[in-house]
Length: 468
Image: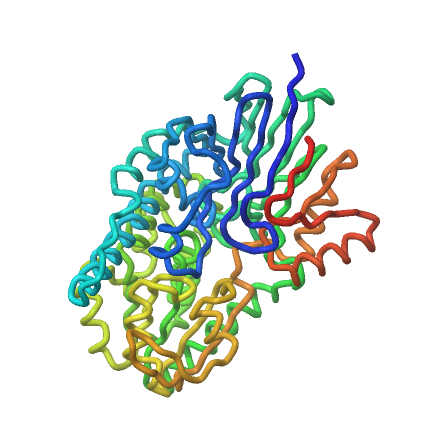
């Protein structure tokens, strides 16, 4: 029996974060990703947030990977009635408990602080919209499926994951839907990795598709080559050493942190790292690095060999000056170190986390250096600093920006324009291609480039519905 099949663009339509797409297959409802929009006030956003569907009516969630902008709304989905299956790769299933519980914990901590402030002012307190057990329940609902294994999660639906090469466990989602037009293949790229990224394998090529949802984060630019990026990083570190200051690297706990640790280990292995100590100042990044250690057999072995890896080693063994600072007291003590340190801390876009405290204590010192190694979304503190803002307000205080700010784009874990084009050109058939997960400028540039190659694409708006 054939089924009607539609797809609605719920999130990450003409924006980078908040990935979410709703498939209706007959009387079943399936979500591709359930991500959070990043850069906004979490309490305000979560308290006013309304799903564009009834969470209890969702039968299945399929996750491309664990990043919060693809998975972060799962606890809220559970809190509002979802109790179906969540299908993801084993790597994603390992990472989700760390990310989701951390996200909810930070929300509850911030809400408690706001409520204390409201109580002192005689204002009404806010009840939490979700609790830690909602994150725990979301984890319990996960059903891991390895790459290259075809499964049938629902009648009329087949699923197979391919390696997206973005972070540990990241997947290209391949769906075969038995609809009114026969069997149709939908491919969702998730976040496609940069082939130059260390530790990850290259994104898998897809042989054929009828419909493609393709990310377009860097659709308007190409990354500089890896050698140039590593040279830039080395130069910034050497300049900080000469200036007698410290280096601060805002980094996402998942993926980017482990990549930067790799490059620092490489420089140390080559005798080119002048700093005396590297602080990994993020409990979540420390936990995730432990998960990466468990999956070293699944990572690119030639990359590991280049930094002296031998069986039985862990990533931190390859960088002996690395120090994990889990407690708040250890984190605060870092700011008493006046020179010779590299501090890696979250959040990657400086919209929260320990990095903001470090910026408060260090942005105004001209001997310090701030190195951005990842995408900075519109509206975030990181984007404002990258764009050259010379004065920012942190914790109610005006802070002048005197630290030297570096932006190194070649370390991106996203495919760039040329790599996106190569990936989509390899897909056989004549698929309908929809550009998602990108800002309008990037999407329009990629669309024009593909049109010049006789590949037509569409840029959906939030809420648009297409027939599958």
